[in-house]
Length: 442
Image (cartoon, rainbow, N blue to C red; front, side, top):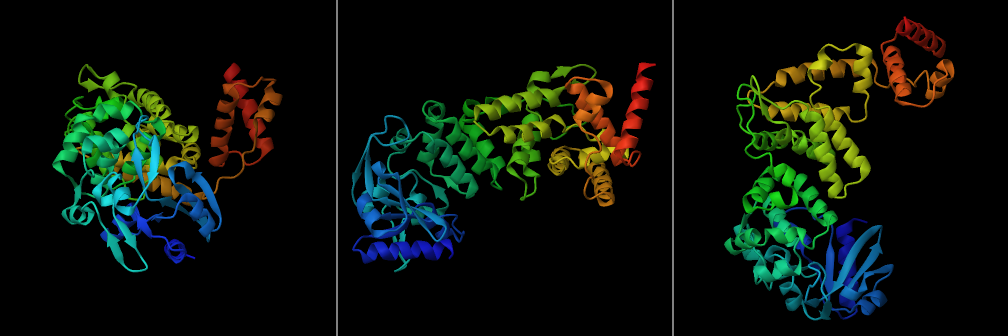
């Protein structure tokens, strides 16, 4: 069954047992905006033990806070008891919860547009906080006292920016002032993982550039992403970058990504020139020598600090390290090109080339188009690369070598010969290697 009908059945069960039950929060907001919700959170007057008795397949994921998970028809639903909170000494979770009614539960939530309840069985909205009015006005507004909402959970500072920009809304003035005033709170008691998750949601939005501009305007950027803030005001050579400084170029490039761009590609595009502030120098013109490698290293530290998985960091850093590889593809041999083109990250690298070019004035998109044509022609000629002819053990045995980076380099050269069709079996590969090694010793 679909998620929505299943969630309605859960509400019917709770109501049938004599309890109030509603959809809550983001799903109500999205439904009223005509957006398909990603999940359906449910609130109820039933206490946690009563939820467990009424519903099947429950998991007490946050029972002390009144939250029970139920698994129905392959979908997970959080079912929470109406509550009010008593103090947030850790800046995230309430010190204690008091089970209460729908009105009090709504008042403890973050933004008015997230504080509405909806009964899908009667088509009735419960709005105790003015959420519908703000939704119609396209406003993001803290419920009640903005300072109190921020003190309860410091991440709400970044969430305000996310909702404003992912929904393409505006800030209610007092909300904006509070975000500015308490920006520094974001690094006091908020974990890197929670900040990362909010940033990822921003990055996947069509309005990510606006969100980063808001972060810069409010002072949040230099607190949570100081490496990116440093790009502001770093001049670039005018003849190649008439669009402006490094910050402007990064924002332009991010804006040029396709809607289908993956999260690693988006981060790589944002960070591809993050090493330019450290490599700026004025010689015969403004130069950023080795900025690709420095950008890779800066990005690795930033992403590691935000607790991204290692494989994610590796992909982003690979893309950044090679984002200046445009010209070599026009002159390298077909075998070497194919080794690159069949790399698992190459399609993302090609998209990064495009974003980089389109984010530059004047654009050199015609150059990227040439590479894209070569790429598609080469891939068409060899859609699937053949298995390698040699492995490390073969090379070590042939030349009596110990494991080292040299083995990888030799295998890479053999692979290029194979992809170019110059060696077609193991015997030919070994013979070619013997000849090359013999020539190198002369």
